[in-house]
Image: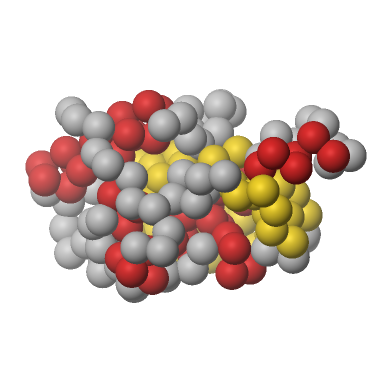
Length: 168
Ligand code: NI
């Protein structure tokens, strides 16, 4: 495993549409492992392959809940419910945070590290993370969809101290 360099906005690779993975291979497994290591090192709670310059539909997430580390290849959101407004950051956009409206609950389908079809349901932070990472695969950054974007150091003025603005 190795830690990859995280691409930063405005690198144009972050604006491309990532391509589906035709089948699970050891190369894709290595990519997943490198992405997980890179995400934990950053540290962040989610990472999409375009963020390390690879235009494949591959994401990893670990929001610190019972799901642990999630590997997801060709993720497709099949269900969305409700709404949440919360703080979001991105490893590719250091120093900025945003208030972003997302669905409260989502269900996502895809392949796991072994190439098996899996379906994951998440709410709150996991739901937010899934939507943020799938956006990355479509060239969309949180700053495109945020209702408000601000510098990280202005964070202390924010009323909800619980909401730290995870790096997704
Ligand atoms: Ni991000």
